[in-house]
Amino acid sequence: MSDAPENAENADVIVSARELERTYRGGVHALRGVSFDVRRGSRFGVVGESGSGKSTVVRLLAALDRPTAGTIEFDGARIDNLRERDLGFLRRRLQIVFQDPMGSLDPRMRVRDIISEPLGRARDRYDRVDELLDAVGLPADAARKYPHQFSGGQRQRISIARALAPRPEVLIADEAVSALDVLVRKQILDLLDRLAEQFSLTMVFVSHDLGVVRRVCDEVAVMRRGEIVEQGPVADVYDTPRAEYTRSLIAAAPTLDAVLSEKE
Image (cartoon, rainbow, N blue to C red; front, side):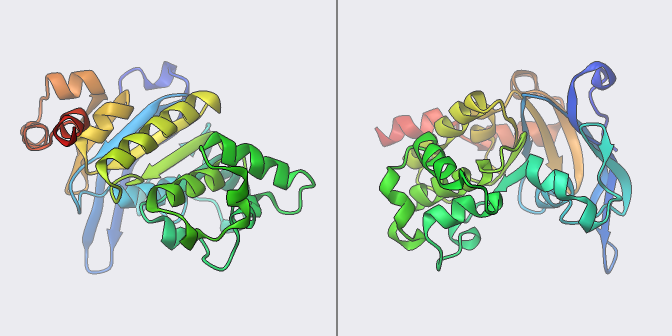
């Protein structure tokens, strides 16, 4: 069982999870007693190895799945018990950037239609596309092209632009840079950092890479086998880890800066 931060009730919390459990058929326990709070405007990291429960957390936060037990609140409103037709407000206010942009971008659509899709038929939708392409560092003529005409890093920029289209408050980056070359990874991380400031975003950054989480997040939860074994400010968790599992992850993971230095 994991404890949320002690000052959670007094903080400006936008996402709150309490005692989350998720059990699948066959008695597979994906999550056990997971609790945490994400403060508005913060960069909250969820880190752990494959099978730790990170992806299940993402699905529950985005209401793509329901917990077996426990509650999730978004800006004070419970979302874990809502029907699909009542989740429209969440779909606009919380968006996800996935690991594989080719898996989330329709190859038959031009970039301008991919990015503008969440906007429906709004008159200014293509103006919004131009604004977002500029924000993610792509030229205006990218709007007329198709996903296969871009590199992996460029496609991830398109995915980010699409996620920003409905003006969300929370952006979940689910292993969003893990498939990228280390130099491109740094560029996308710097971009996300800048966009979080520019658009006043709260970010939930999910990764197996502790070096990445340390670079971009100010709070972190470390997961193992469906449980949070440690959480708190990034500096505290990394500099004075309490859990043996956290210490072993830190010892095994080079920082992104160290990897970049080796490249140079």
